[in-house]
Image 1 (cartoon, rainbow, N blue to C red):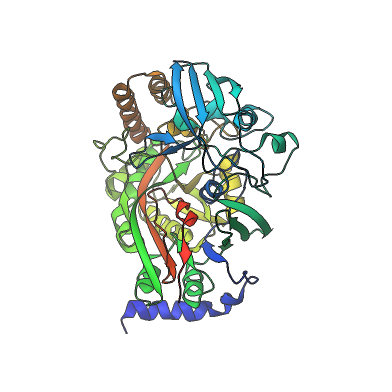
Image 2: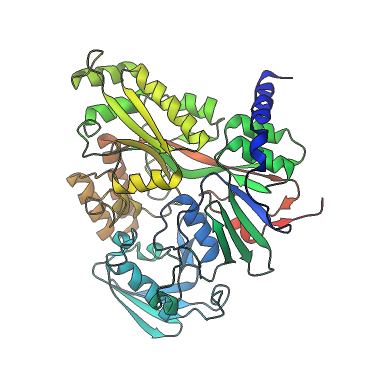
Length: 499
C-alpha cells in the first residue's frame, strides 16, 4: 500500500465514530455536504459564499452573466433610455411565480430594491447601489431605475434575488423562511447544519448538510450518507476519492480569489512594511503544490487576468524571505523585537491547516503568529465588525469590477459596504470613481487595471490564489457541472440514476 494512501486510511479509521453524527435524511433526498452552513436565506444580507450560492437556488434575479462575465437577461431585459435612466422589462418564463403562488411583478422588484436602499434595513449591499435615485413602476412588467450619476455597469449590479412586496411589507423573516421564485423552494431549516429544499419542477428533495471535517465528508460520500460535495477538500482526500469506484471527481478552473486581509487601523499590520514582509514571506507555489494539490493558480489581483477588467501585466509577488526580513528590520523589528499578529480563521479543518502553514512561513522570517479559529458564524461576524488584525477569506462569484467600490472604497466601511479592513487611499478612491464615471468601456478597463496596480503596491490585502472547483459525487449522481465561480446552479438539473 502506498504510504500516502496508508496515511489516509489511518485518518479514515480515526473518524469512523463521527459518522453517526446528525439525524437521518429523507430517503429520497439528494444530500449535499457543506463545510460551512449558510448564515442567512435573505439575499439582502447574504455576503458569505454559502449563503449567496444557496440563495441563487431560492430566488431569481434581474440580471445574470454569460461565460465572458458580461451581463445578460435573467428575469428581465433592459434598455438604457438616457445616461441616468434604465428601463427593465420582466420576461415571461421561469421565475415569474413565487413559491407561495403569487406572481412576480414590477412592484416586487421596486419593493426589493427600495428595501435594500432603506438605511433602516442596513443591507451590506446598499453601498453598491447608492447611485439609484428613484425606482418607478410603469406597469406589471416594467420598472424604471433613475440614477443620480451615470453608471455603465449598472445592469450588472442588479443581482439581488427578488422578494415578494407583500411579504416585505408584512415583515416576513426571509432569513429563516425563504420565499422566492427560484428553482428550489424552502421546506425547513430544522437546525443550523441542516437545510431542506424542494425542487419546484419535479418535487425532488434536497438537503444541505454541514459536515465540517473533510475526511468525514468523503467517508459519508463513500457510505452513501451524502451524495455530493464541492471544494474545501485537501488533496489527499481528492486523490483518495478518485481511487474509489463508487465516487467520481470533476475538476474545473476557478475564479474565486483567496487573500489575506488586514485591519488598516491596527498599529502593526497597518504598516506597509509589515504587510509587504508578509507578502514576501509566503511561498504560494509550495502551498498550491503540496497543500492544494495544484488545484489553484497564483493571484496578483482580485480579478483574474482573463477578466475584461483584469490586469494580466501585474507581476506575481515573489517568495523572498530575505527581503521580508529586511523590511521588518527597516520597520524596527528583529529577534529582540518580533512582531506578533493574531490571525483569525474559521474552524474548518482544511482552512485551519492552511492557516497553520502560513503561520509557520511567517514565523521563519521573524513574525510570530497566534492562530484564533472560530465557527463560521462567529468568525465571519468578527470580520464584518472589524475585530481582527489579520484574516484569510475568499471573494467568490465576482462578476463585475464594481466589487472594488464595494470592498475597497473608503466610503464602504461596514455596515454600508464590505471595506472590512478600513482601507483608505485617495489614489484608489479616485481611480474607483473615475472608472465608475467612465462611459467608454476601454477607458474604464484601463482605470481598473491602474487601480489593481495601485492595490498591489499598497497591499490592503495580500493576494494568494484563485482556487479551482472540485466536485465529488457518488457515481449515481448525474447532470452536475461545476461553475467557474463555484455556484450551485447545477443542482437545478442534477439527478440520481439507478444503482
